[in-house]
Length: 422
Image (cartoon, rainbow, N blue to C red; front, top):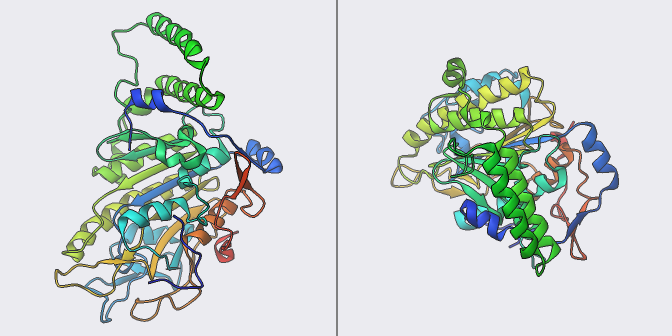
């Protein structure tokens, strides 16, 4: 379902060897002279939790109990008087005073193939270029700070490697380094059988070969190739990020399931200074047996997410880390013949918190049955404007320069949601 008053729509992975062999940069600058000085004072970070397939807003942030489409779960009071969430989110309910809920999302794609990319790219107007995913954009705009680590790390189940497409027209340099099952890329860490001296000799030889390789290649290609080698070398120095054990108490708090383990690793990456950390959870596409499916998945998310919010707050990091948890759309209010909920971009929810974001608020509302937004509708372009501003970036004054082509960093037909911002 499309609405004319919404922003208009716009428009894997490689092995380590392919990463090193194909990485190339695009000619790109950011016109934001005062922003760079701001970032140096206090480096911002992002935790982006992606619930792939579609979390049900009715079983999480916008429950409608005792209604036609409400389902079997009750609501519970949160730490903020007057705000209720599903009983499947008891731990998040206790940290609601740190969170902001958006219940007025109305986006335009009801398929995974279109929705995943459109939501994560922010849906700028179609200008004949492929925009970066949010992680690629943030890693370019904020850089890697003083950590020396890759600015964009993606923790996900199954396979890992370097994901260049997330960089869009910025080039593969701004893609994601994916840690499959939370493990470092294969062969990234120096084998115990190889001495430091041997490793240095090997890299000296590579540098000589690279110089010859560079003679007939563009400057941008060479810079990107060198960049990813440098990032790999920095990651090699931080074996502790992967090898140091987590405290049993933390493992219990976050959960021993995949999402719990990966969120705990994400906390470690944020503590180490990684600019943008994305954590994926799969299996949320509950076309059948929705109530058992969401009834299993939502508590896992709730456990790990609330533990992360608590830890970021206690460590004083929540003031500097932007937290986002969302899917590509929500689930239908109508329950289908398989006792499932289908895709529903017309009215759904997300949760955000941290730097620049108001605490303990709900923005927007749906009607009594949860079928449509009953307040001002917000597309993903509005959210990108909001998140950039929360990070200290003015999306109206900052633009990409793609080889002389000025491009907005967020949909220029949208604006920030003021109620979400401090």
